Image (cartoon, rainbow, N blue to C red; front, side, top):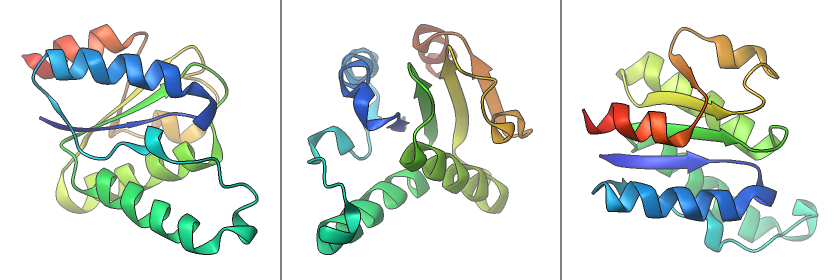
Amino acid sequence: MKVYVAAPFSDKKVVLDTYKKLRTAKHEIIADWTVHKDIKPYSQNLDTAKDYAIEDIDGVRNSEVFILILGTQPGTGSSTELGAAIMSFLCFAKPKIYVVGKYIDQNFCFFHPSVELRDSIDEVIEEINN
């Protein structure tokens, strides 16, 4: 399956570990934002911010599975990606959406009917493998 993994920028290591697990299970990472540079403040890096926004939202839109990992508090970018995933689901019945981790009660959108809440990435991988 084509998978997009969102997380706060500070949780890159967790995402890279998740990529390994997903690839081992024969899933495709549709867009890899972990290679992006930290470009804050965005207003001083407009072209790169635009490119990253297009790449990441296209990744969400083209995914079959969207996973938001919350090892820390939700980030603004990952929350935006979740909103894009929910809208894509409402319009096109994809992607399957998961919010995973410790802070799954921190955003009212986590409780949208299209979102599945899970405690671990291993649970999600087991589900999408079946």
